[in-house]
Image (cartoon, rainbow, N blue to C red; front, side):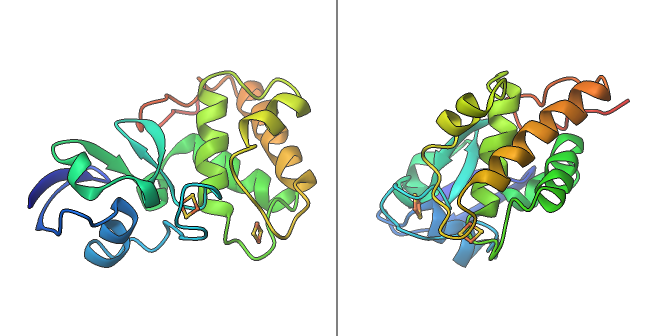
Length: 170
Ligand code: FES
Ligand code: FES
């Protein structure tokens, strides 16, 4: 089918197979390999992207289902102010080792911050329960999320929008 959508704020058109997943479309057609594929059946969260501002698992979303919609991948958040803080905190708090789970993790942390769901360690753990990491033991990831919350609060930054617009730091 013919597909026309917005990917990382740019219009994209393509002819795709009806059964092509959004993850394969992003990686193979768009060259956006920051969307990682782990389990490929909706369990690990490595393929998380934003669809019209809401997190979805790209491995179990059909490319055909996003026709006319807006997709944001980890690459599309490169210049997002809140994501810059989250990245910095993941680095400082040792929230990653191999980095395979990291794009999905930071997208989910950003979304949890947008919804005010990083208020405690247990809340962060609940929010990230659908994202698997085989390296860190999660302690560094949780610490990074709480650190990002504190830094964004201290900077007086608005919580990152649940839409993919950049949150502006003062
Ligand atoms: S690759 Fe999509 S959830 Fe694991
Ligand atoms: S850092 Fe390796 S899987 Fe999470």
